Length: 182
Image 1 (cartoon, rainbow, N blue to C red):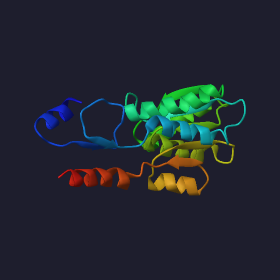
Image 2: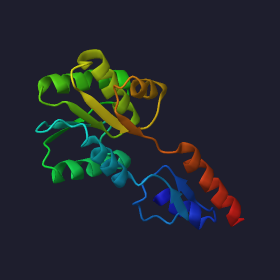
Image 3: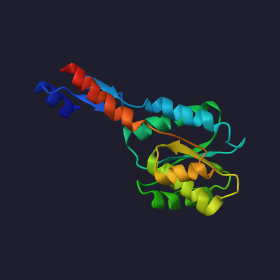
Image 4: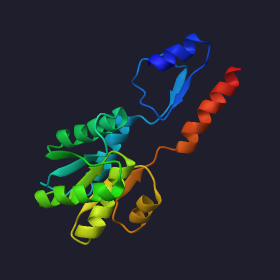
């Protein structure tokens, strides 16, 4: 918030994109995903494939990032409402390392059959974990963002669904807003 306030005080118009929208700073606008609601949507769709009576692994590639925390809160709100037990694991921002952490977490609790992720690295890592160690064994993953590997894993039926952020829109609309401001 401080750098935004400094820019505005200096006469620089500030339009944000791909940020959390809960901060009270003085920017003119923000174009971003409703992160909490996006988490709720992932979890609500996942209810279709979470085996009854099983816990869920919720992953974040980093702790303390407001976007991931908001998505996690949204996911957990749905799971809590449905009485679904959940375990949260912080993986890493590296999909290959995330894969190994997720494999260990799934092996530690064989009742978990579903991984719900909050970001790109852990979504990709979850898909890679299921592909490597649990393929054809009734495991499911869902999460966020797009990468070539995530798209491949969706096509292969390893990742059930992912929500993208519409990066073109998030980048383009702020430019339009600033252009119209002039």
